Each structure stands twice: as structure tokens, then as C-alpha cells.
Length: 224
Image (cartoon, rainbow, N blue to C red):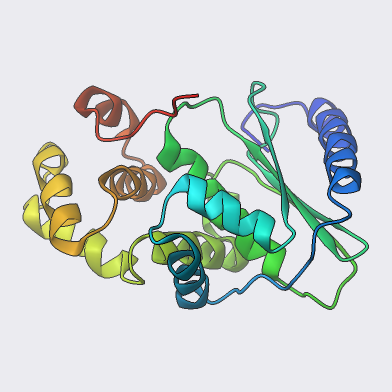
């Protein structure tokens, strides 16, 4: 759970979110349902074959194609996302107050990994803590979901591209604002997602780059 959050409040919100998620599942009963790949390259190929590019919208369409219902909520955080399975049907709850596509896309891909886990089980519950907490960083399952999300969006080369950014910035956080767009162009990946991923990696090491991202306008706002 987020730091200093009362457990009782978070439990109540989880019940509320689960209730909404079940309603969404009931409305999606007629959709076909198939297993979600937990191999990043397989999901990436699936999105590209169907829609031609990796983006939030195309990832969202692909989730629904697999029969995974997606419910976005923008309430102040009680948790940071969830994946539930009822009677072999998956539903993802995304929780963000951010208006930036890269943040939503990373979380959606992360939860799709969970939706693909243990497909033989008829029930599943994953409720996400803040991805920068020690609990999250030390979880092998959560680390695998984070790597999956990054590899889907970054051509399967998330770690190598991140190291390229660090090298291009000569180890300087201040120089990342120039390095990230160049590295994104060199690798033909979305600059907003790469910037978000670098900020996520830095936050896990105690460095706050989120404010700089907004100043440098490397993320893409959702317009709707």
C-alpha cells in the first residue's frame, strides 16, 4: 500500500474497485476470451500484427481482444492498480491521476502480465503497491511484470536501451533530457515511454526525475 495509508481505508477502496470491476466483467460476458501471452516478444508481435504500432490505444484494444476488460479510475490513490480474475475472466483496474499516456501504458502492460499468469486458475487477485516501494522492488513477480512491460514497448531491449541512455548522458541525470530523445529515435521507440521508464528506474534508486519529465515535456498528454 502507499506509505502512511490506513490499511482499513485501502481495504474498503479495494472492495469498491472490485465491485465496479465485476460490473464491467458482467457487461463483457459476450466477448471471446483467450490466454494473454506472458512472453514480451509474443505480446509485442501481437499488437504490431493487429494494429501496426505500440501505443496506449493499441495496447488497450489488444487487451479487449483477449477478453481482458479494463476499468480506468482517477481517484486519489488508495492503491496503484489491480488485476482480478472471476470464473476465468480477467479485469484490470488502472489507477492514475496522471494525464500522461506513458504512465497509463506502463501500468496496463504491467497488469496484462498478471492477467496472463496461471491461466488454469479460475480466480486471481493482484493489488499493486507503489512501484517505487521497497516491497515492490524486492518482489520477483513484480520485477518480472515491470520488465515485461518495458520490453513490450521498447523492442525487447529495455535494459540495453536504458544503459544506452545512461551512457549518452555520461552518467548525468541533468543530461538525460537531451539523451532520451536521441536514444529513442536511434532505437525507434516511443520517447514518452522511454522517458517514463527512465524516471521509474531512477525513482527506484531514490532519484526523482518525474518533475523534470514534465518540465522537459517528454511525455504525451492524453487528449479526450
